[in-house]
Image 1 (cartoon, rainbow, N blue to C red):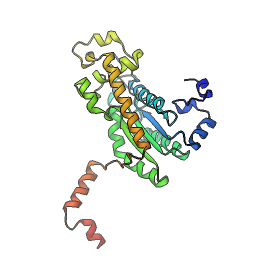
Image 2: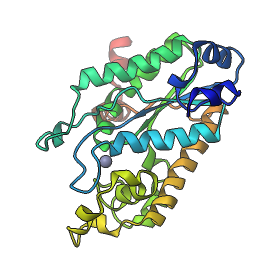
Image 3: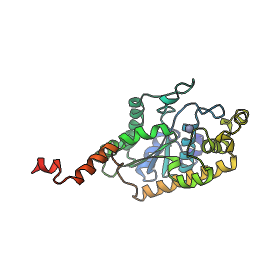
Image 4: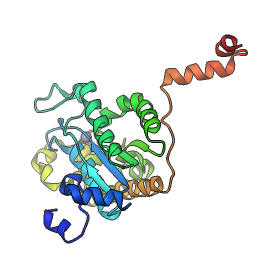
Length: 268
Ligand SMILES: [Zn+2]
């Protein structure tokens, strides 16, 4: 996408492709309503997939959704880094320290909030980001809802929005790591990312089950499910606060099961 398509009046999919005037007017005019913040990782993906798979695929899905829902949706991909300490044994893997990564993602969301966006979906492409975000998302949601009551922030990995559909196609764990799911999608959406010689050199690998045709269907499932989710967000659905941590859940259950609870004793 280059600037000329914007000048002809078509909204571009990436925020950086807007001029400041175009972005300001799209928000104030009520046309631009949702940002997808694409996050992933740059980390080893066996010998046959390029290391940028996770951020490249998350961005690909997000951009396809933005194109379908234009001009209501725009994409920001603020960092190629993810939380990948567990892959640092493989040279070329990049990892952020968790606090730094959280800060970049939070600040990206906050920047859009300050400029009038009220719906943000953080769309994730790296399984290693899930548990850390699960631990902090509720805090972020409550912070933004205190500052902007109509703000809705959600986080999902693109394979989770139609996991059952994906699992019917690949028959093994979704997403796996550089296995059938990721490799099939790369064959279709990021063909320059696949080293076919390296793929053929590991007979019996789950990655050798991958096909471009399967990748087309898996990519469509992810795009369709994400687009549907965004449409529902824009209709006022999916405003749920993320559940608390496991220990928090245990605490609440213990409270519910004890009569009288420690809290009621203190407050009486
Ligand atoms: Zn991956």
